[in-house]
Image (cartoon, rainbow, N blue to C red):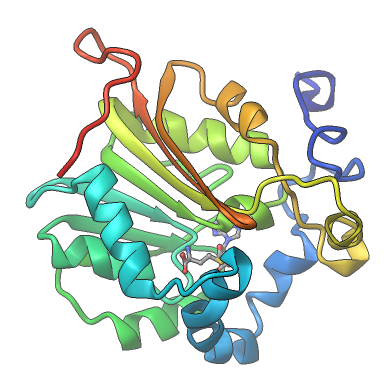
Length: 240
Ligand SMILES: C[S@@+](CC[C@H](N)C(=O)[O-])C[C@H]1O[C@@H](n2cnc3c(N)ncnc32)[C@H](O)[C@@H]1O
């Protein structure tokens, strides 16, 4: 199948059409494989949501929001998709979850392992647009801004939705589309190749998943989806 003929969202995300070889990575993805990026990432990450949301937004506040809306339980198995320096992996492990923290950058994974030494975390170097992991392997998946960087966001979301068990949940933090000039620039391949998806488009890439929560803080969106099974009702919202 030619995926370009499917619901590829080049218009909706402002991204110009990109070649679809598995070997191709966005400039943002490639830059995350530089050791210097991995070395500085945690310092940027600690400030990022304050800058993007326009209000004090510490990592502790982000972790508390995630825990309140998703309520990860001890013994659950989670995938942290594009873990970078392991922020969500660390939060999940702290809740007693078993975590697979995956990233396509070896320097990021090395830095993450140095920072998050919890025994509940396994590390995996992979491109999550085609992970090869088994269907329905996880109780939950976290995506902290990786959606903005990945080469083919539709393929990325479809792959992650496949990995969630029925009744499991998906947590997204990303910068949604504004249509503004800065996003247009950053979506150019030579300036990052970033994707700024529309939340409605994100929902359409997750058939069988129901959005239970959606928060917008300045330039940042937080969303929780639940993969439907017979016991999940629309509008259901699990609070810890
Ligand atoms: C913006 S950072 C995410 C940070 C992290 N999730 C957090 O919340 O701090 C994006 C990370 O995702 C990784 N990444 C991007 N595309 C990926 C893909 N298709 N598969 C696996 N990792 C990917 C990058 O290497 C980078 O480390």
